[in-house]
Image (cartoon, rainbow, N blue to C red; front, side, top):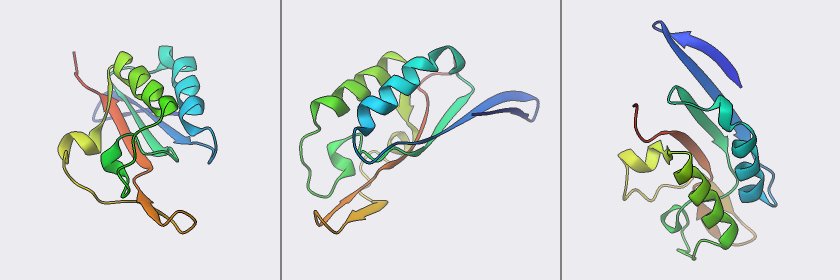
Length: 116
């Protein structure tokens, strides 16, 4: 976590690198623990090692329960995937799994839905 200011505006950047296995609960727990540090001036970036929506994977598989719980936690914290906000229908990917033959967007940038 880096705290500083840009153009006299306080900002916090939180970089998350989630493990390959158990990423959704890991991220949810981390964000819950850091909830008091996260505000409208926080940008959360990183390799989440999990797609947040079915659109973020080439196979269009359903999102599992752990990822649904993560998305619910993000919603409760008023956080949104900034990329998905600006590109709601884009299907560009950041990771190819040769073992599964699928592409996934596992790198994310999160921010507050509103600036109030």
